[in-house]
Image (cartoon, rainbow, N blue to C red; front, side):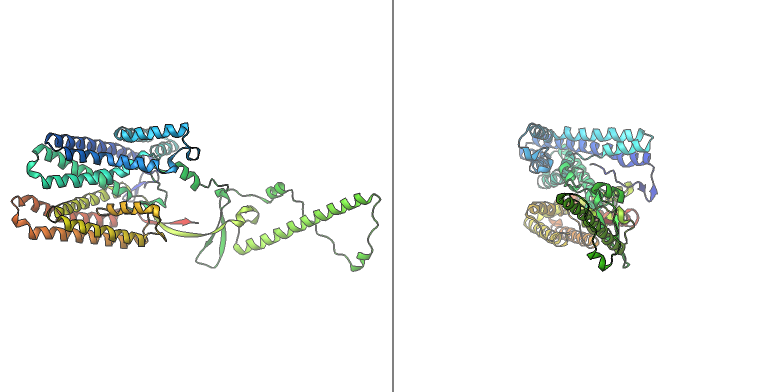
Length: 517
């Protein structure tokens, strides 16, 4: 998973040097991420082999389908979004054809594609660690964290590959335990743990991503065309933006960004002549006009017209400068002449919203332990409950998804839910059966949402476990494993609560105010 270059340079509040930051926040994650990915792929291939050897081609095919599902989803999302294409407005050009060919090949051979990206990150992270110059370190880190489209597959792998794989292998182990060889059981157990670790890592990174995005984080698969539009490639530069900020006091001031223009620049640009103040004249002077100078009538008329035009232009310029000066003095502008012309018509009020900085290395580690134990308890509770009460489990999960989607539609900072987001809400609702991430949406009441979510999840897990433990455990021949699962779920809940408390008390990053025009 791509790390953000804006990540925290502290551990437990202690500052890190640039060299330590490159080592701890970039090189170590760059090495661990491909190691986990290769273990998952190798273990799942081993599970497929064991299923075929045990005479279960259906389970082997479903396992293989889970492996390719995130690559298929990533390819569909990429091809249907014009912001990813190099020249979407020109049809199927040679550049578009070559881009399409590369993306299809990359998604078909996704293990090679992903490992190549990890190798690139490791290379630039090592260069950052080896560098002694601060500028070189920052440049190498920027290259290591540069957005890549493969990161979309990395994100989808957690929720379209790892999570379904865990549920599938747990179902096979519970339903067909007596027909499975010991080697297959061990391989499946290792696959379950590794895929749970993958889901925990991704959830750790995206649990408050939308709030962290306000402080500088970015999507690892950033779209180049969308970034160009967001940076203002519309003929209006950001340096011409003037923001009106309302403070607690009654004063208001204009905040200028970017380059400044002086009066000399404006005068030179528009060829403005200095204003001339006419002398006061007596009323009798009107009837004592001087005689015209010798010349033709046409010359006299052209000279009079030119003099009148110059006088009107100078008068208009003088009055305009006076009005601008009065208007700017009311707003408290520090330098009237430095405000560009277009800035006077581009005034917007500044508002402040709360953002969140990225977790430091210690916070990510504690958050990973929290999510791993929580996911372990959740998948065990759901899988065992589905084994005893399949219809009731399906109804409970459907109700859970509907409740979560309704809560999101009400709480997200959107006035309406667009049609193109309906598929996303269904996807995120299914993800929220097992974990919660602030992805593509931003919560209004974060503390309330998290407290309500985990209270609901703990209550569901407890009710599901108590139902089969009190009603079915005595009738089972191999009740030892189910008792072990019950105690594991209870113990994992305590570890989850302990990790959450430790995270929120010691390692949770503080909120910061972000200015938004």
